[in-house]
Length: 160
Image 1: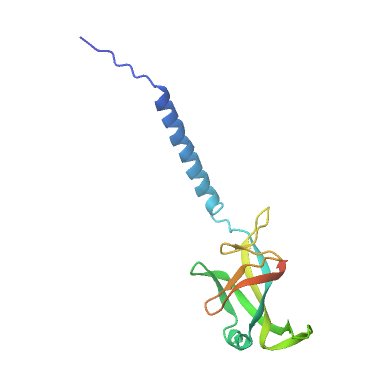
Image 2: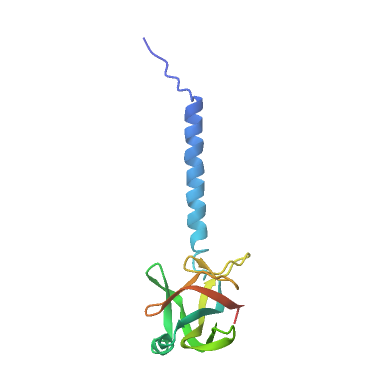
């Protein structure tokens, strides 16, 4: 006897095929969008920002100057930006009479850094995994030789 072999697709087979197709479309779109078109250079935007470290030991100013310019780092990797300069300003505290006086042992440091970031329709400037925007108070400025945490972004300039 000859058996007729009829293959039927059941609902589970159809769902499995749809899941596999969706996964292939997703992976393909990620690969296409990853680097843009072949030979096309990714668009970047030059960003310069100033970060303020308040009330740091006065000797840190001279130590930072020795290592500038210094490439920016994030997650153990060197980024395509750098800390370009640092300037110091007096740090003031209240004395026992409630008057503001200059602290002889501490200063405020203002670091200027620049980096090229991917240009996007909605601009979210990120240095490594950290967003850079005016008023951010928990920023970590990190390079090969310099690191300050919980500093404040006081200025951001997008473009040349």
